[in-house]
Image (tube, rainbow, N blue to C red; front, side):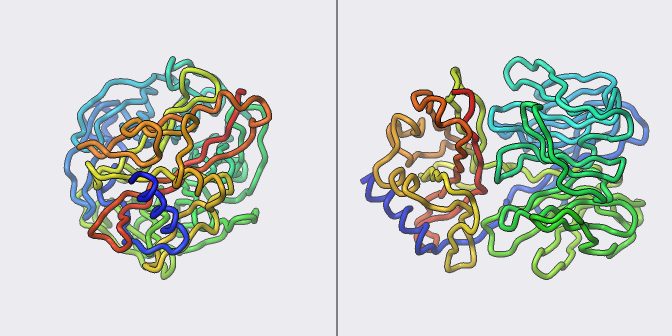
Length: 432
């Protein structure tokens, strides 16, 4: 039965029919804290329509960094006290402090394949920091001196390489690709007119960045080094930060937070990438927004295991709780992916690894926790499961190889029997 149903998933990656849905759970926004006290909310949880569900006041200053963690906890950076705090993304419950970097003015945040946190900054040398996901040990990776504001414009993982994309806010606003171990970097572009957040569009590799002034949004096409105004300011507010919604959706959408006066609305807007149509959500946020995150954006993430070459994969699709799913893996990149009749696309290029895994399994190298020996697992009542990736037996020759993972959830009410198609997640094999 497992092989038969997994073979259907393999067929779906070729023929492909599925429903097309963006992330349905809403957003988290990081705001400016005018009073600079611990009583004014600096993070708000809002629903998909833009209504504030709850707000959080932990921290003492502006929230410039906001990211979903490997286990889909929500982390945010408080500028003045340097705290990186954790909260439950649905309730706003304080889950404690992840780490404190006093005096560095933490900015944007991102997690890598190992569960390590990377933090941009605008003080104490304007460095890029790495925080070990297990020990919380802090390492300074890059520092070019005052004025470079490394990571103030954003820090992300490049879906194509598994390395860092880092946007500065000074000295020409450069965009760098940086190795996660701090060994080297390359300048990709300059003149980005940075504010506080950018996004890599998985279907194209293009970079969209929030800006100040009248630019609203800028675009850096993949493979180029010069950005340009993509949308001029459509209202009296500026889009300071931006994220891409689910890549597989038939309608590709950006979501961003606004900076402006309360009369202009400091809420959330979405942008249809194909038509450039801007839609304002029904938001009651009264403070300007520095950062935005899509709740449960990372349906597949990972953290290092107990030995080199081992990782734990975290699967979390809350909208498909208790459903079966297929874990898909490939070694051939994400574009062009596989198109579906509904207009949706699975951004993973199927290869022999993909079809072998879906048809016969890849145990003991890769298997789900809920169904050991198989890549077909079951989500629990919260929509969670894990999988283990153990490549420790492969040896040094495998180092540098990249693998991409995504999940297809099974839904008998959806065309072809599959519901959610997640964004891909990349792991670069290293340390063997």
